[in-house]
Amino acid sequence: AVDGGTVVARGAARKGVDGSARPSAKLRVRVDRAFGPGASNNDVYEEVDALVTSALDGYDVCVLAYGATGAGKTHTMHGPHGVVPAAAAAIALAADERRRKGWTTTVTATAVEVYAEKCYDLLGDHATPLQLTSEGDVRGATRVEVAAGDAAALSRLVARAAAARRTASTALNDRSSRSHALVRLALTGDDGAEITRGSLTLADLAGSERADRAGTAKPGGDDARLKEACAINRSLSCLVDVFRALAARGKSRKAEHVPYRNSVLTRLLQKPLSGDGKALLAVHVAPDQALESTATLRFAADVSLIETGRPTRDAVAKRGLRPHNAGGGVRSK
Image (cartoon, rainbow, N blue to C red; front, side, top):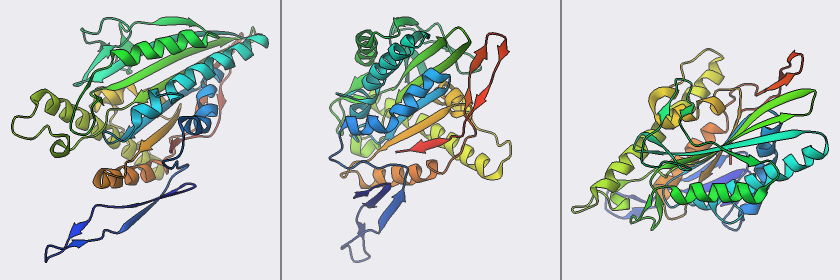
């Protein structure tokens, strides 16, 4: 059940000592915003639009979709009116409005996937792994410059990246994403008085999997799917470790170590999650996945309490650096 920013869920039934089924306790979780089964992708995007378009003002922004396999992450991100196509259209519209106010905006897009702990280009050579720098930037990825106000061109580009992503059929999902997909738009603005540099990273994370439910652990199961699931679960575990470290750092106000370098995924997300950027985590649960949904909701509750610091606006005046700061943190939906 969903009530505003509260989600109420019941875990999987437990067996008593006599073998009879015992009802599980209810879990009540508070998040920033919750959407019920009747919500549309338009409803979801309305909640994140202001965050997305703030990238044009010089902020590093990241939106991540997290949850178990089959919970609806790819539909939210890439489906009709999903976050990725809607964000591309919103960036194009906002850039066109800024043009009328004297701004020139440059949009440069990259798209990569993390598959089996390697990074691959979704807009170019899809066979050769890409190299990552120590700062988490991708070396050699195809960079496509798109006319800032051309919504159709941006939509075609994100559709092209989505089509190149690795998918496969499992017992839980006939089109299961087997990789984490990240679309990044680098946004540079110039109005003659200052130059802004922001970015928008849209991450559709592969779903965590229990091998017994996905059918990959059964005799005669697909070894490739099992290896993929192991790699996905490991990288998601590393992401959870990053969020836990961020939470510990926020509570102690000390320079806690954050293990960004433990996986390719967390290295790619280091910049927007480091505290200088803004991040939003859209968590997904499904009524037929009680155990997975309970774990996901507990994670969402923890994330909603994280404060990563004050996001920094990257704005350079013609005569030098002019930093701007605003409060923020990591939010969960």
